[in-house]
Image 1 (cartoon, rainbow, N blue to C red):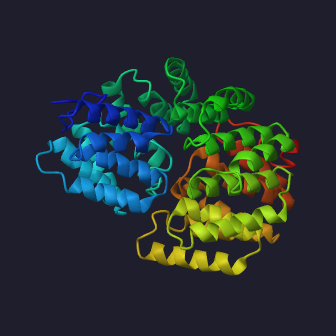
Image 2 (cartoon, one colour; image 1 turned 60 degrees about the horizontal axis):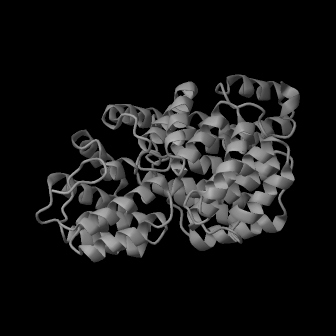
Image 3 (cartoon, helix red, strand yellow; image 1 turned 90 degrees about the horizontal axis):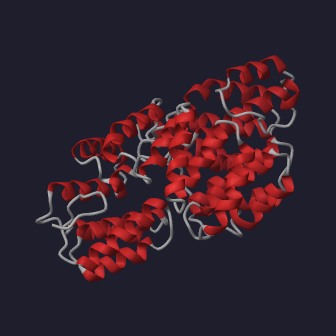
Length: 434
């Protein structure tokens, strides 16, 4: 029987189909464009190749083309007769994901990976901050992501693709030196890996080497296709490095040329998260956005995400609504989030509704309300989904609120309790606290 890159059997008799599937899988795992075309070639060579249909579904979903994704997973489900147990489990798990059964899919993922740890496409669904684990709402999700990676590590050895995922989990739990050694080996072996480049940017952030991150991204990004799924987000990291360096012209240049809706070629989810987070952070750093920037983001969010339900998207939408003073929209979104939470259908619980109110209070100058809200949920920030770097926005907003309220002792306490690593917070007025 033919096998994939990691030696797992795949049910196809076509070498052309297998070659295309392997090529597409690598493009998908490294976040390079071309995966959909590769899977189409695999399916053309063998229309009954179930795993090619699954991979096409995954690739389409990552491009936010959910109708195509659901059609492809349905095609795979119709081809399960005669599959190996691993392939049947693989199909079933992705069907759960694409049908919105995230909790069941996460349970199934652990069972699947215990039996077939080298199923990289399955692992990739929980290796990122916005995967199944990252959006589970669990307070221990970062520790669980590390435990998952550590459990799989003996099976992958020094594999260049697995290493960045393992390194990311290490960096998110404070093991910076080990993470850096791992990612540097991986990127030296295979630099054409956007997951690796993204991980290195985060490690530089976590160990306080923002200038090094800027140098690396400046050198790496030109060789990465503009339509690669991580291009906009890695550019966002570059913009944050410029903010950190006190270079708003460079930061806003990246925003307007790559990240903002008018320039972005990324799926709406990526454009939303990177654009709103950048604008809010820029304002905290003392470099206010133009009012039209926020209006555009609010309208973009309402067009593409009219209903709440995805925590990570919701708190970014709340930034735009708060910045625009759109109290009615924000209140309606908060109310619906709270209803979903009460129904057990909002994994982050009260965290995102609470921070949404905090953002509104901050923009209204009600710093006491902002402070009370963020203080109440800061220890649960992971439940809102996102990396430490992304949810630092909560902490930065709290710090700025302390300063605006004249509560310098509280600001110093916040800084003293901050995790070791990231330095020089890009918050106007914070430098005087050191």
